[in-house]
Length: 345
Ligand SMILES: NC(=O)c1ccc[n+]([C@@H]2O[C@H](COP(=O)([O-])OP(=O)(O)OC[C@H]3O[C@@H](n4cnc5c(N)ncnc54)[C@H](O)[C@@H]3O)[C@@H](O)[C@H]2O)c1
Image (cartoon, rainbow, N blue to C red):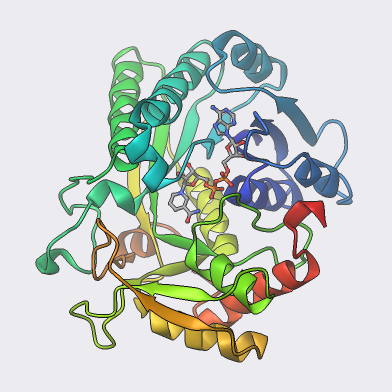
């Protein structure tokens, strides 16, 4: 299939691009490179499957409807995997319109471009942040859990979910089938086991990379924000899904999508791990006893969030391979220890 991967020079999009390319699909990456890395494209070009037909890169924004329409037509794109977005929750609070403009507005422009070309499938990177702070009765979180985001990042993602659903309905009414999937990710972690690509965010806000940077001596230590939560060890519990498993779910869903399908899946392992458990696992994997300190709770951090992934497991062939957190951390450690300064090293 011919697939456009928006945000394909970023963390998750690059892993999707690699998987698609190595599974025989033709990939077009669209990325502004504002947060992504050109080195991703250079590294992907070293794969034996990569050539001018199978891998193309366009530096640009999903907001540029004209250019994107031209690109979709030229590359005869059939499916869009839409990863491009801003994803810093704190920044979304201080600059909400930046998030609404890019994560909703620019994504709507992308849909307009899809409408003007031959795209018939669309897979959207949504997030468990659209659920906000579900009460205990909703844990583990099912797709039917009410969506009440508590920050502009979650609001903008939810707004685009709605735009996508409305667009799909319009196309069905017109008799021009358009299928879409909204994949709500939990905490994505780990790196490509071949260490060709990896995670390189600046600023880094995700727990596992922060811990590994501390293990590398690039940070003075790790702070646990809140040790008095109503959880067995007092720290927050989250669901960690390996990036390789996450992107394989995209490929599985892409293949499963029928004409006018609308699918919504939670992508997590279905198991919660506390911050302390992650820290202990990272100490074991790295063999480094880095400094850990305890700080105050951060506003908007719910005690426990983990997925009920039974719907995606029942309706598709997706089987996550990384269910042991040590293995997830090991792949991340392989990347970070080989690239302590990310793609710059
Ligand atoms: N990382 C996680 O744990 C996580 C969890 C839930 C959801 N998500 C979602 O997954 C997606 C990918 O996340 P990531 O961690 O890979 O982020 P990332 O920042 O590594 O990658 C995003 C990429 O999109 C590009 N980009 C941003 N806006 C663009 C635009 N308008 N047009 C073209 N390119 C643009 C950036 O340059 C960057 O390369 C995001 O939509 C994010 O909201 C991530």
